[in-house]
Image 1 (cartoon, one colour):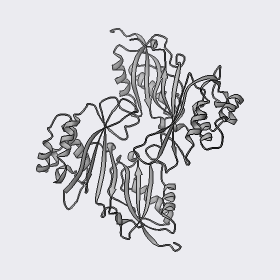
Image 2 (cartoon, rainbow over the protein chains, first blue to last red):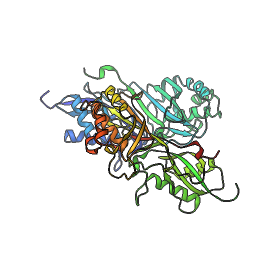
Image 3 (cartoon, rainbow over the protein chains, first blue to last red):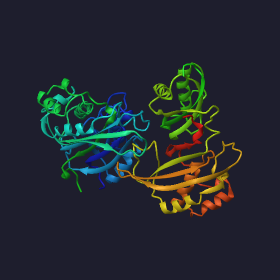
Image 4 (spheres, one colour):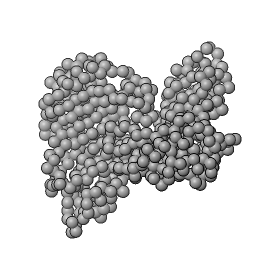
Length: 262
Length: 262
């Protein structure tokens, strides 16, 4: 490609969100979108709009967030990847750049997402994991949490599991996976547990309020069937607390494979 | 114990060293020793000297550093642990407190140490591991490194593997283990490798210059037998570079079990 042309790119981005005020650009604050737009502007010479599949909150991490952008770029996607990374801080990396079909839009075209929420149960705090886990003082009943987790599967109205800030047309979402499992830890004696949730989409703070709800069940304060009644009631005040941001990581965003050009 | 008595304690401490100017107290800079002494002073009401088994450099981490201190304390070791942790930042945790025999001294009484040095070979930088690994752009020949590592075993004069700053009486050390191995990484596609070295003691920057030397062998710039000639020559300028601090972690410090009171 010798002439500069406005091309559409799909960026797959990993970040440690600890030191950012979230994904979305905010004046005077470090954000992931801001750092990506700064990097892209250095290459393009003018403002580039980088659209994420969704806004992650302050402290939330991503193993594979997806963003779309349009850019004047004459060179290969591999060169674009290297050039973007050269202008990004250590806590953000563009892991993959694909050329996308014109009009590709990271929010509108997303067909599914998977999140992981990480917990530490009991024990002393862990200086190596505090950025990535919610540390609970007590052990949890994982079997009860697993039973409760399965009750989230399928299509439900999740209006009882969103915090204000959403303005989605519908609050119905399809949960495709909701798993609670022990994680191995060869590092020290801390007990690590994770919840992974996959859906066609998520409302604002939905994963974190689902996790807060599962933790209530794990603490024995509610039975697994509580999940059913929360889904029927649809009132946010009834469900569990919003789990802290630092335990959350966006694992994957799914698109139709045809969104990228070979 | 009802009367306040000056007791000797053995503290086992874990820390993420990324944001500290190393172990040792320095005016106006955050250090691990400084944070521990601040915490102990809050409990004792006056200055407490906390002696580490060795000074870790800025950016170096510890899974189980050991420190000794004398403290007026009426309560149990478990209460002391909780009280110290309540006054420490998230990046430092006292994992264990043992009552030690009077006169126990974390430097003088140490009989062995084990360090791990972590590397990432090739690939893009990893936002979740940059604090804990030396990222090399290229792959390494692990077999050659393993052969070279075995040549360090036994008693040798390591004066060719220390940086200025040491003032030890003897530069002879006994290497009890020196292992190079691939680490599993289920997180992403980065290749993780570690070097673990155990000895009766280490000179200043000795692990990091041994690792720098093994990396030269792994790059194919030197044969494994180079290690022998470096040990014989004993000149620091000949060995490999000092590997960066952030990849290093103090795993363990060994003492005679009789140093603690049941």
